[in-house]
Length: 127
Image (cartoon, rainbow, N blue to C red; front, side):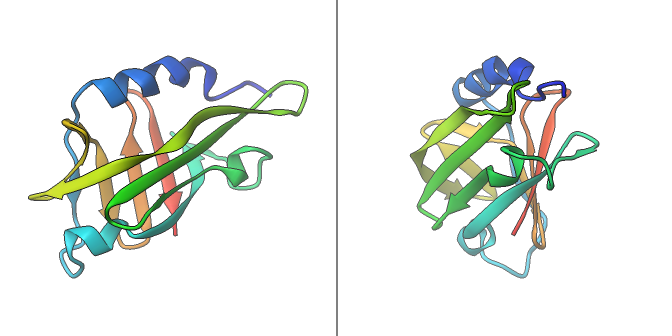
């Protein structure tokens, strides 16, 4: 199986350095409450990965003040590679999610979080 994350590894690092916009579309929740919880990776672009090894163990988790990334890639030999693992301080201001000074391109609608990693790649997570 073709690895989805190998081309994204560099782009994820760039994203954490670069600036992107984020929005909240669910106005019924406060900005902090909207992101709280564990979000499991279910889709990469148009490909369902919810039942694939490694990808189905990947998630983003937040308590509204910190955000933890645990993103894995499936290798050709069936083993997993950690792509993005760690916890960062999360700041939420006027509908934008920031890690440090960098805005994350998150869109939250109900129980779905879309992370636009770059112009061509989007990761979809569900609670």
